[in-house]
Each structure stands twice: as C-alpha cells, then as structure tokens.
Length: 469
Image 1 (spheres, rainbow, N blue to C red):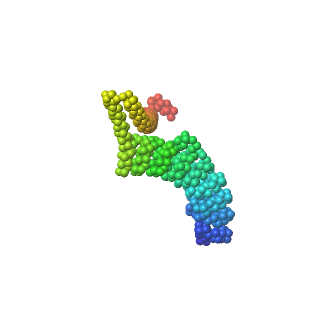
Image 2 (image 1 turned 60 degrees about the vertical axis):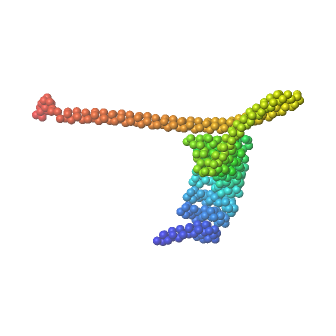
C-alpha cells in the first residue's frame, strides 16, 4: 500500500509539473524540480514533456529554466515532434524567442517527425519569416522534403499563400523548378490551385529567360499531366488564370484525360473564366477522352450563355468577311459602269485622266482591303488549325499510351495464363509420378504377401525334417 501511495504521489507531482509548464507557472516548476526533485523529462500519456507544453504555449521563462535544468531537447511526443517542432508551428512573435533558446541550447533544426516534417516545413506553413531566417542561419536545409507528400518548404508556403516566405526562400536558392512533390507538382501548381495570385507571381519571377519561364509555367504534373492553368481553372480562380495566360500559359494544353483548362472552367460554372479563355483562343470544339466538349461539362445556364456569346463572334466574323467580298465585287461593277458611261458621253482628256486616277486609287484601296481581309482570315484559320493539331497530337499520344497500357495488360495476362498452365502441367506430372509410385508399391506388397502365403516345397520340408530328427 505504501508503494502504491508513493507511486500515486509521484504521478500527481508529474502531472502538476506538466500543468505548471502549461500555465507558465515558473515558481511551481522551480519548486517541483528543485524541492521535490521531479524529473524535468517526465512524459505524459502523449509522450509530452514539460518542455513541450512550455514551448507550445510560448512561456519563455519556463523554457529557459527547463533547458538549464536538464530538459532533453530531442525528446519526441507520440507523433515524433520535438519542442522545436511545436514552437515552429505557431506564428506569434513570442515563439521566436522560444525557438532561439532551443536552437542556442543545441536543438537540431533538421530533426524530423513521424511524417518527415521538419521545423522549416512548420514555419513555412505558419508564415513566420523571422523564425524561418533563424532556422536557416542555424543550418536548416531549405530543400529538405517530408516523407508524407514529398514536399519542400516552398510547397508548404505556396499552398498557404505566404508571399514573404516564398520571397525569402527564393533568395536562398533558385533551383525550385526541379523541386516537385510526390504527385509531380511544383510550387506554382499549388499556388494556382489555392488561388494565391501574389504567390504565383512571385514564383514566376524565378525565370531569367523566356524559354525557362515557358517551360516552368507549362510544366505538367505526374499524376494527371495538369498544368498550373488547369489547376487555376479547376478551382475557379479567374485572376490567377488571367495572370498565367498573360505570362505565357498555353490555353490549349491537354492533360491525360484530353481536357483543356476550358473543360474545367465550364465544370466549375464560372462564366467570366469561360469567356476569358474563349477570347484567349481556347478551342470550344475540343473533346476530351469521353468525346465531350467543354460546354457539355457546364451545368449552369450562365456558363452556356457565355459559350453561345463567345462562339458567336467567329460566325459574325465570317459573315463580315463574306459581306466585304460582296462589297468588293459591287465596287468593281460600279467602277466599270462609270467608265462605260464616261466613254459614251465623250468627256475631254483631262477629265478622263482625273477619273482614271480616281479609279486606280479606288482599285488600290479595294485591293488593300481584300489583302487585309485575307490576311486576317488566314491568321484566324492558322490559329484554329494550330490548336486543332495540338489537340489531335495530344489525343494521339493519349491513345498511344492507352494502347501501350492495354498491350502491357495483355502481356501480363498471357504470362499469368502460361504460368498457370505450366503449374497445372507440373502438378499433373507430379500426380502421375505419385500414382506410379503407389502402383509399384502396391505390386511389391502384393508380391510379398503372395510369397508369404505360398506352401513350402517338399525338398525344403524333407531337409528340415531330417535336421530335426
């Protein structure tokens, strides 16, 4: 009973130490550690030490006292977090001093939790740039990735839209284009999906050449081959989509489902985004792998109205071109009739020369108008043909990948079938061998029984009888 009472008192004192650290009661912590010799590294059911609770609440004085009286800096709770992890999760300024005390005492800035999350990942999610700068000064690896989604610090900052954190990380390194998570997404994919306009602009400042920026802005992820524009349209972020297109994003890019950003904008029921993409040159007749056009993904009547309004422009343009050609023909007929009338009226040479010059000028204007119209028509046709060729090329690539996958599945199926037949043949051969063995054993036993049951011959009996006598 006395042992039980002593253990109960020790447990109560340990819980009191955690409670004092949680409240920031420095006198209570000092009394329990110095007067009652309580262990500063005692852990509760969540493997949390008093240092964890003091760091979680930002109690600087308690953190300093515990560190100076033997608290272990690398002790982890049930999810693998140290006190530095917990201090890095918060964004208020008082936690910066807590982290500084821990780092000066020797806390490892690159220690990982159960999911591979490091303090720099926590800081990038919370947006505390002062704490981020401190971690980097103490040796934190800015390119380290977690083991949960394979994301670096800049991915966490882009997901949460922390522009200043992104700017600081870009100042430390410029090779972020190659840093992708486990889904093959860059930080630009995540900023676009989250609708963080300034973060996306900041990330596009990385490029030093137009070719580099073109590759970065149109880079596809590994899961569905989406570009950043696909992500922005999928989640309905019109401003981000406008910025991406202005910076060089291709509106006719297709993903593995043969869908363009216009398909996702229509499915999101955003008429403004649909109108913008159509005016930017997106092909409204493009079909996905299911044979559906973008308008067939729209469920909102306003989106369908936007499609009808935007696609009416090419028809009106074609009507304008036809009307212009008709006017050219009418002008020619009118000029010919005027020339015939002048010739019949017998007008003098000066008037004829003046009329001839006016006719030539008029024909030049008509010719120039025709050339301009044909050039505009050619440009419009070339743009449409280029988009169609790109879509057809992407669709052919998609079908080729599907065919290769089908062939691979067929090869695996044939291989499994051959393996199964081989195993069946081996089993049948083993069964036949076993049956033959059993048959031979049976014949041998029958022969043995037959020999034992046969009567002895007379010579043997006579010999045995003589010996007995």
